[in-house]
Image 1 (cartoon, helix red, strand yellow):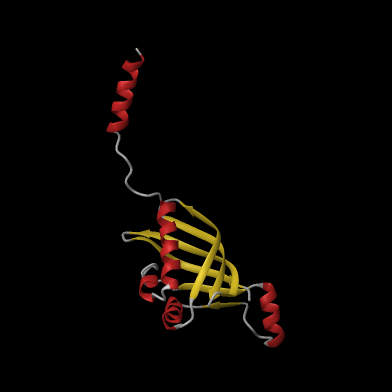
Image 2 (image 1 turned 60 degrees about the horizontal axis):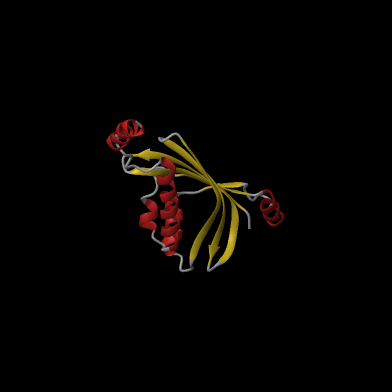
Length: 157
């Protein structure tokens, strides 16, 4: 009697299609891994492919303690600076130091079409922390996969 019920259940389980695609969070985690790997390799071309073409939303802001220290020496030091993807890629490709960025407490929120990634980081050159802070990426799902549309981060020296 139990076998009668088991056979249809097993047949149904094998007939259902399996999802061969990864979850959006898994795909975004691969973008994060490619970002870190490309940074370490000084591969500006690979890094550039992770961004939405034509997007240049890039802002650095100084943490309160760092801003106070900066303004003690330079009273008109700005709290934030708008940068460009190109300047970042130029820095990565032309820098001879070992570069690494360690991400901590990564959080990904997505509906499958757009996403935000938020984490704390430590930016290292030649193994020494140069700055740390919080960083957020805004991503969009394109026909070519997930791409970074905007990047904002705080910088604390």
